[in-house]
Image 1: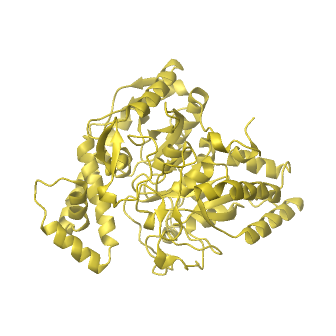
Image 2: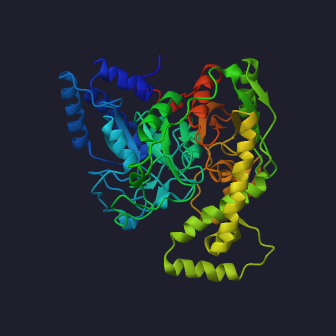
Image 3: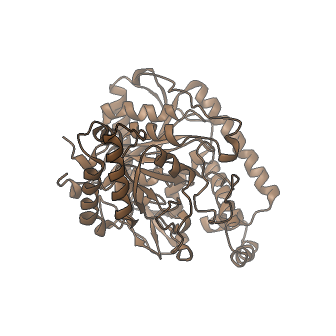
Length: 492
């Protein structure tokens, strides 16, 4: 039997509702685990135990009176430190925001609170969520519970590490270059990147706080907010709670996501794209993914080696160009001028990631417009693929969790099959999906030979988020699902 701290959010919420455990008792269990395990991980970086205990007590009192706050009544959760939560600092990893105390909750956070959640703390991120690792000058570096010499990923690395270590029941993250999916893969938990534009982002940093205080705000290109959890069922539940138009649009329209395309594993039509020379897969990760898909085939799943009519290298280039333009928009005038000068000195032959970043960050609007037009062509190619197939299975990242690396972002390298590859390759498979605005669920499917978790990326059609989440649920009966890291399988 799984330890109490590792149960799914749905299971824990049901136990509270049925009075098998109180909100206060569950909160205290998590607080004890946090005190025991968080010092080594540095995953949870800000807490208000007094306020969390007070809300948990109120939840228990309300339940005793027959009041039900919602599906998360009394459930202790944590929130990624890019989302504003009242009573807790929101730094987004920036020293400039280390004293920022929000006056209101982010829209997605408020939805979870409205459902009865007890927010007990914030989890670590890189500076403004802009790295594949989770480290910053405010709170330091977060480690992976499967191997503390490795990163849990970024930017929702603290979130994924917290869930894997059994320190929280549920998490809210965000994703622009794999920031939900890569940490879920690195830490062996579930994560869902929603379709672009279906979860309100107001109260997320970036953009900087204090600028958009009314109904209208900037919707950052490619970026989405979504859940991380220890079960696919939890992902589905959270999507029920947080999917909505942006606040200004709620006067006129609502979002009703369609049900999953199929009911059973055998009914799904599945495309498979497990490797590509543009972003080659490490053998250990490839072996786990192949083993998982073989098991699915033996269970009756209809899997074909088919993919959209898309060139991975070209798609990654479009992704990097559009992603870099977001980073350029957020640069200071001094930094942007410096980037312009550096970009002007580039030679055409220079196709390094640093060169691509500089070109993308400083591109003229007419160039961005053409890149966006190509993106729409890519989106159509995906839509054509999903006329024949229900989902695509592909890697989340080319490698399992990578060692900590404190060097400058563009100086880092990763080892793939004992060969050095550019660090940005880690984002390649995630960017393929993100640039098209598609929903994608990451589900744990096994452990590498050297003891690291692997998650598979389940890509679904635009606005059909329930389809990849449902398939992740079905997979669990075949390939296992969440497994706690060895060093954290203690009491509770």
